[in-house]
Length: 408
Image: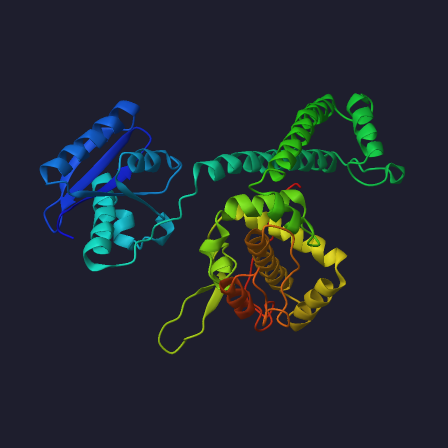
């Protein structure tokens, strides 16, 4: 495609460095301010180049960053073809990491784009969610962030008591119960039991807890309201039926995963969530597996970890599977937990896809009932799920994972 204007961009908070080329021609360097005026000037310049080249198509690419997808929206609205590249999927040598400049980064993006257009090479582009999904993510992510802040404050309180040698009386009961909170408030006022510094610090931490807990209540109500919208209602209700999965876990899964139909099989789901082992194979060692890749949204892995432990505690079948995997290697219990996370994520994916396809509630698919199906179940979905249920999902290769936690 010679009649095409290809643009690689190195995007920053205040500047945008562009390398613009047509076909196999030498790239031209341009720089714009990353402001409303600067972006408008860039769009105007690219349109002028397109008109000068007899209406040549403009293809733009830049690396994903904390800037979000605002630039993508503006460029697609202007009629350009735009790609957002995943930095983690762009191969970089050790020399490149030691000799990094904005111009070289922009040129690297341009060469990837040019190889995709002229030679058909794979482009490491990310899936761009629609604006509504992005907006829904903000609410759910805020809830997780507030929960993490509350967990940190509680951990600080426990550490403060431990450092000062204060132990909880047996009559108080469990942590963070009503009796426990009354005891902490009384302790924060007890001037004779410990120093003023520690006592004032405890009072400060207790005051920090109150607004965080109130904010969690407010956000939970908003998430419940979001889950009842037409966009999520059927899928959220279906996922909520799974043992260990609550409404928050379901909404984190749905918002972070986005369009579930873009995954063709369970391997793609596990790979996206970073729940597959890394590989370092070469020569005479063709099967060298390591830690899980930790690619994709870490928020989903955190809630899956908590949901898996809840499932192990409440579901006898999940407990038996966990014990069976731990028995194989008692020193690596985390392998069994990661296997459970992978299994649970795939079950959630199957259920959510089936619920959306049917437009209502559904039973979890089984290998026995998927053979025939019916007119209300598309053949494509029957083939996909039937293929995924072949073989034991939990028998995964040996992998290691750090246990994540999130305040739910």
